[in-house]
Image (tube, rainbow, N blue to C red; front, side, top):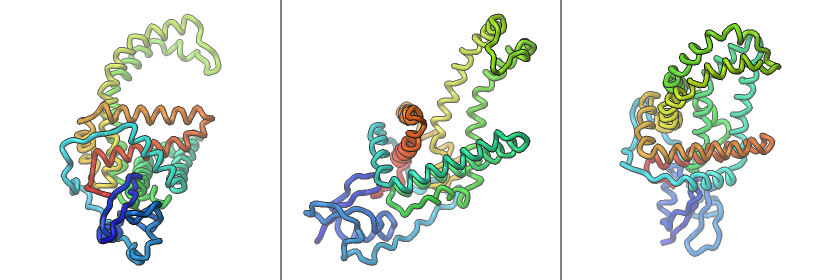
Amino acid sequence: MALYILIGGDQKEYGPIPATDVQQWLTEGRLNEESLIKAEGDADFRPLSTFPEFAGAATPVPPVPPPFGAGPSDRMPEDYELDLGGCLSRGWALVKNNLSVLFVGTLMYLLIEAVIGGLAQVPFVGALFSVVNLVISGPLLGGVFYLFLRVLRSEPAEVGDIFHGFRRAFGQLFLGTLIPSLLVGACLLPFIVLVLWKLTPLTGLMANLHADAMPDPETLAALTSALLPCLPVLLFCAIPATYLAVCWKFTLPLILDQGLDFWTAMKLSRQRVHQHWWLVFGLLILISLLNFAGLCLCCVGVLFTLPVGYAALMIAYETIFPKGPSA
């Protein structure tokens, strides 16, 4: 019986497996005509479409998304291992091998956010576009994660998939962005109240400040004296805010990928991330440093580092929230 070795969406080799398994994976949509495969004993990988024994078999059945609120489709394992370096290196490989769709998808997302953000600064209509950005940011970012997941799983993907969240789960993705943001912001409320209380007596001094001029020494000393005691409160408030922000990082992909409502997705994300919170936090720090390096390259580099960061995050998602074996 002929055996085959293939390269999955995570850029790892799988096999050797028999032809019947290859055909089954084609039917399930885990492989497509562009998937790289070779017969055992061959030297090089080549597209699956070049194998005559699989001609006509590459007609994957689109997966049926689960209904919202149904809960995770598969039982999660008790624990998981997260390789930070592996997430970044595999993320880079995924973007490099699928540069056109992932780069263009990320660029379209950034352009939409930039245009709406710029319009939000326009007098009179700016407030309206600020509300628009608040409403669409969750569904749009969820669509970006959805695009990266489809490419990672070797499923058919196109740039337009970044708008999938508007069709599939607009309200849940909106709430999955709004509610965590409000709860994280609530953690900082004591600091905000303290700052307002400290600055209220200085309203007269601050009214005389000009945006293009440095404050005089007396005003600067008064502001420093008022704000310095607020720093310990800020550090104290930042602890729960940071913890929750990291815990809820996978809320949006859980909503789109597993068909969860926003509250169930938040709970599941927190439960799984809590198991290895510092590892997930470390991954987010590495991604932030990568994007900062991209910004330092005349801001152009971030167009390439952002897709790598999104890919690394979705590779971590696949590890933390597995849906069963997949090529």
